[in-house]
Length: 201
Image 1 (cartoon, rainbow, N blue to C red):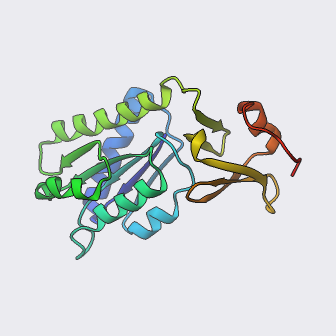
Image 2 (cartoon, rainbow, N blue to C red):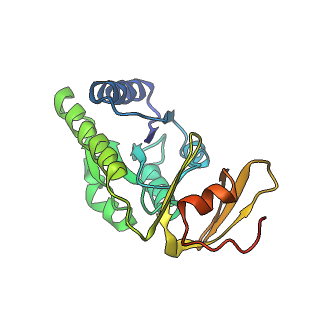
């Protein structure tokens, strides 16, 4: 699981990160990456993987930008249709507006609720994401896992794979983007026998 937090207030950053770490430790859930950002662009640029193992806890208002988190969520959804998005904000009035952004948010957590309810809501989101990761993969889903990478996407979105000019990396072209990750074509073929290897490179 990878968890990304967008929050520009240091006190709230610390609060959310502490709650998340406590939940992970208490539940014995493995988390490969837990990162906190105050900049939407830096968070977006740091996204290297795709799939339902990616959990984003986003504040809506960043600085003077009242809908910055909503716009970031829309960008994330375009990049990763399977990511889990949760809004953590003081602006509960934005809940209806969030539907216009069509980001399919899992939850809308109000920072003003008491500490116990706050933790319970975040815990539900983490457990949901963990359950999605653990669920049985369908035949129509490509899943590739290494210590450095976890990719999960529908076969219908894949155009082709090729070796990268960067050593030990593979390029994946989808309907909408190009992804580069550590691996080789033999490993891809081993986990996805339905793909046809037409050339070694």
